[in-house]
Length: 522
Length: 90
Image (cartoon, rainbow over all chains, first blue to last red):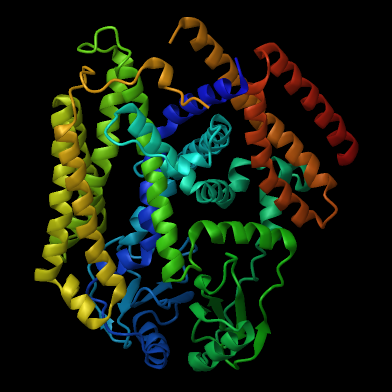
């Protein structure tokens, strides 16, 4: 067996083993490049533009009213791409972790950009797809992360072996032979993979780095004795602030934020106040992650009673920067609009690569079946799983967005119900994928996705101020991109549905590729 | 797919999966000791590099002439790494 044949085997089987999950990870991760925009779309109540001075004055006043004597206050400031200010507080008794953003916590309050308290619908927004990307759902987080990491490792292997399998990697850039079943799928798979190969390699490798000490704790065990010991050195925690019992006014936050921003030469992303209202109070100003490529906390600590600087940002050493830069590249928080579109399109190409690779597996084997009308069980399982994931998941995701618009605003556990709606719709799609004839199942699910997406764009125009024409008129390009995106993907899915409906019969009566030509000759 | 090739894929697949992870963990630990940097930096960078080791070993296992020679290669590299780790870690 030649090197290329052996790598081709490894590529096929590692790809098939995790292809569906990779498709889901790619899809959820790709839309998460618009996490902030999706969050803003999901909370149309928060529209006022951000007035920094007003917010920094109103936020501590609101917190003092809602949570006097709290152990800690937190103020999340909006970046350039989202709006609204999230206030959260932690009582003295509550030693636990901070709740998830927007997950319907009673110890939280939204302010609009002008600093006025607003009632906002309970939703996970774009954070849902972001979490789905590596935590999945309905699965213990740690298992999910291990499973996703396992898939990412196989993805890394599939990329490397895919490159070795390709003799003519450069010519594949320009090769597309449409209307020829297996060849077309192969060319499409190659084009999607090769054109954006640097992206795939980067995103897979850096994805592993985001959770690297979970997946690979052994170097830390070798030098530190345990993973926790290294993490303690990597992320030292400031000492807990003890209450003195003497009340004291909090210094104005705007001045502290100004000083922190001058020290970084950057912008503030959030503020934490420990033991507010007590003479011992401290203010931690956190730098915006979107400020730079390196993903790492740069916090400046002030005495909250006097305004004295207590600690500047920690210097970052080579290893810390290397890790932070790789995570920053993965999350793309630094990206301006142009780079963000490139990342998004590359992610779509990756999603398409996973999808076309899975379809190629069935197309390639269908023509070799002894009796194409009754393929073996393994083949049928792959075929149905393809429909359930490749067509079912996009449809299900639109269900989440519809639930955000349609569920009653005040209903209890609303954020969970939105997520539940997505999985219920997916369950219906899976039933269709299993029961309907394959061609009909593809057509129905892809068509339903097209209709659902187009409907979202129309509903936005009717129900909110974020319809496509209104957003363009306002110059709100984030929301305009959401509306235009819905329409563009509606067209794409309509085209795919039409293609699925008109494709030749699976019996292979279409133009058949001779066996010898299945592997492109040199 | 013949039964023979299924066995072939399974054997190499398991060797690639477990061998790659074991060698990545081992040589990552070796690098964490040997990289000429402060401990935290050396450990972080060794961990980053360990994933490249994983991919390289997986390719090697499938590229080797036979499963037996692949396993022999894994063993030699494993023993060598283990000895270096014992010396460097001491």
